[in-house]
Length: 221
Image (tube, rainbow, N blue to C red; front, top):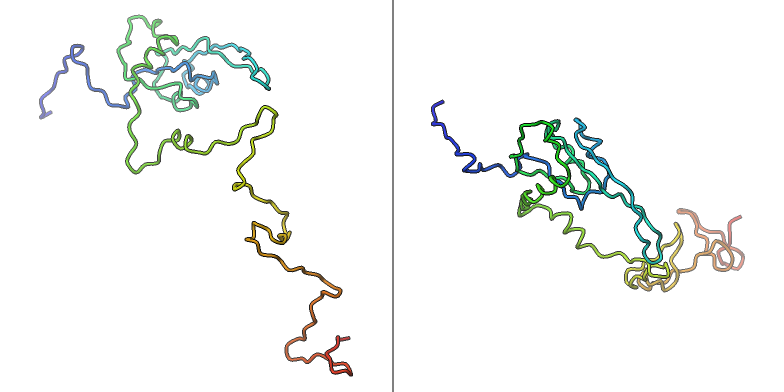
């Protein structure tokens, strides 16, 4: 009440909107896979999607696959309540908030916008803000830095891995073999439970082993 009122000269002077303003929903048609998540999760049921399936040619050594092709993607902004659920649930980043807000119309029936108009609004979507200096890198950069897994060759077998990355797998409780490179070249003594290689019997603490007439220790009976 004590401050002076400020008059903005609109439409001659465009207002400065916040970067996360919810103006209108824009569509990137190339990213849409017709998964129908946005239409199913919309609480107002204001999203209309039509599609058909096309069979893609089979790659070499593969089989043909069917792909959903988008025919219609429309949003009725006379019903939309701008909750943003469709943008949050989209798994392929096909929907974005655009700061455009000048799409008012005198007829409510003209607020149903098709995919051509939604795709034109995608050009006005601002770029995402930069990450903080100590924040984790984006997932796209982390995925790009991972080593590439070997892909199957034309014969169906995977390309061999380098010798340094091969690891031996032993069953539980198995002893390593002699001169095993995984154990550093150390050999393991042979263990047996009887016969000539059995270790000599030891007496319990505080007891003396029995001796035979020749003076050598004998076995207990």
